[in-house]
Image 1: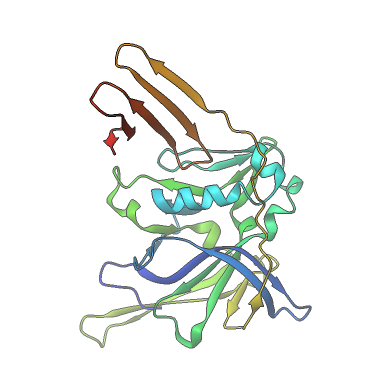
Image 2: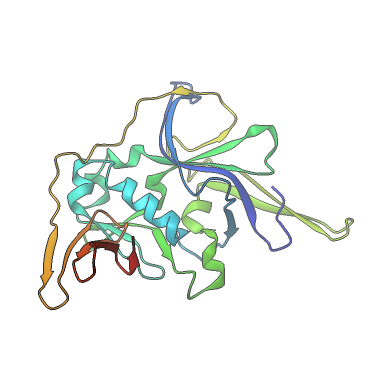
Length: 258
C-alpha cells in the first residue's frame, strides 16, 4: 500500500461483524456492517506509539453501539469512555467473554492489489488489567488533535502482522510502500490477509428489542414546555420537547426547532 502525500492510507471499506472459516483456514461466511458514511473516504495513519485502534467520534460511536449487540453480557457489563484516548472496559476478565471475541474488523485499503483484505479479530485489542478486560477501541476527539479526524492503527493492530516499509527514492516525489503479512508467532486465530471469497452469513448481532431504557419526562410550568430525554448506547442523549407558548405548538430537538 502506498501512502498519500499526507502519510495516510485510504480505506476502500471498513466493516465490523463476523467471519467464519473453513478447517483449512480459508474464509467461509461473513456478515459485516459497514462503518462510516456513504461516499466519504476514511483514511488511517500507522502509529506504533499508539496502543489500540483510534477512531474519530462518528466511527467510535458506530462501533461502540455495535459492541452492545455482540452479546447479552456486553449489554450490561461494558463501559466506554468518550474522552480523548478513552477505551472500553468489560467488568470481568477477557476469558469471560469468549462469544465477543468471535467478532472482527474487515478492512480493505483503496490501493491494495488483488482485492486483498484484512480480517482482524476484536480480541487483538483486548488486555486484562486489574481483573477487568480493557478493550482498546479508543475515542479520538478531532476538536483537540487535528489527526484525530483519521483512524489510527496502533501497536495492538500491528502486532498481528509482520510490517515493513519500502522507500523508493528514484521517483519524484519519493514513494513509501507499506507491506504486511500474517505473523507466525503473534497472530490470533481467524486473522486473515487475502482475497478469499465468502458467502453471506447470518446476522450475529443481538436485537435489543425488549430491553428497558429509562426515559426522563420534564415539564417546565414557566416556559410551558414538556420534554422527553432518552439515550441508547453512545449515540448521546436527545431531547424532544413541545412548547405551547405561541399560536401553534412547537416541537424541538435540543436547540433545533421543527
